[in-house]
Length: 60
Image 1 (cartoon, rainbow, N blue to C red):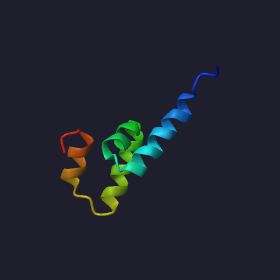
Image 2 (tube, rainbow, N blue to C red):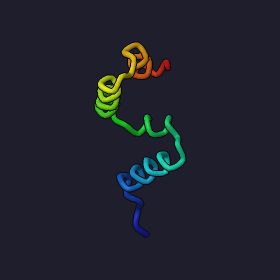
Image 3 (tube, rainbow, N blue to C red):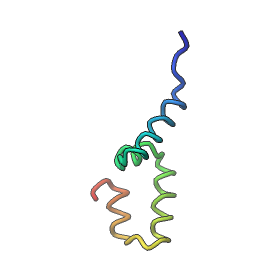
Image 4 (tube, rainbow, N blue to C red):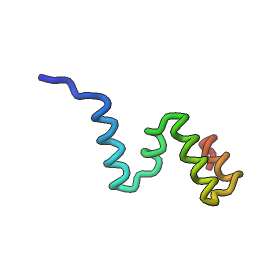
């Protein structure tokens, strides 16, 4: 039996979370650098800076 590929399983979890609207799961699958990029895009799109910092600190 072939062991499951962790990359494939992570991608599957990510797609499932998108389909089912599981925002916390999606966020947990991002690396710290990925989270920074998402928050930077949000700030460019009008996300409040205080809220972005709360999201970054997991206090939102």
